[in-house]
Length: 353
Ligand code: 3EB
Image (cartoon, rainbow, N blue to C red; front, side, top):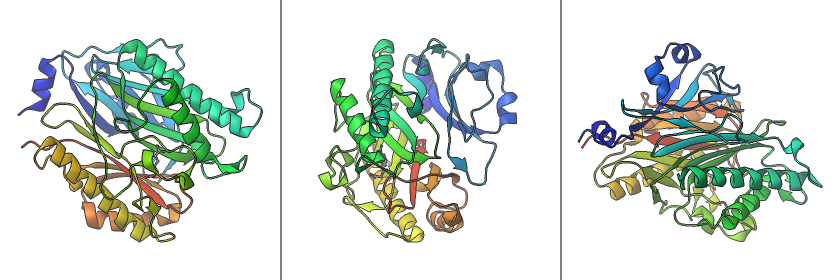
């Protein structure tokens, strides 16, 4: 089956993920730009006309590549995209099927009594505004969301900032009447450099994703209370798109078995355990769609590394499993549990049967 042709026939195009240099981006045709949903820079915002497409930045430092941009695009000649107002707080662009959006909120700009209040208000406001956009454009289903904010492991008001974020995220889901377990988005939450704003970008869709949990891990929304009063809300992975396959989104995945972190202090063992988790997710995804559609070696990876000096040994372990040809981007970031040294996310394209 030619998935591109079949989905283009419906006028919706197929979702593409590309990593390009600024020069490659500058040399694209007008037709290519027409399909661009959004562009993500690393450490710096891409120098692109942001009235045309949403542009945002993950403030984490790339290790190795320093001129690479993540481009989300729908390919297909009949695709027509629309953009949200350039003044909207959530900048967004969408097709009939899919929506890309991003927003940043500085905690310093929030009027709150204390530091805890500022992060919680920023988080709740961000999610409320995202949900308002999804309501307006009728892309009801969040499929993948990237959450970044500074000092994720720091204590504030007697609890870790990541836990405050979890409380506010859960509150926003509840207030909007959304599910807090089951069909919830694939996600990641990482710590960006001090002074960065809360920065979120996401993909949403008109049709729901197939959500996938990991038999080796407790679902995050069922974590016991010792990991925080309010559980994180995310699914381990999801598949979105054509019935025969579609895109696989693997959430941030770490060295967690059941609900406990494993191999504290050992980045090589953590890498191996994380890959075991990703293998299990790929197996579940293949079961769901029927057939060996997703292969470990063919996913596109992003690895968040707590300590830059661990990158070479993490890369060696990862390559042993996924092969030397796999495409991997490394970013330096804090991981949301103090004992985790790395987290790996991935996007997969289905192999033809
Ligand atoms: C974990 O498995 C590791 O809070 O949105 C991974 C993916 C993690 C998403 C989130 C957190 C999140 O619990 C951390």
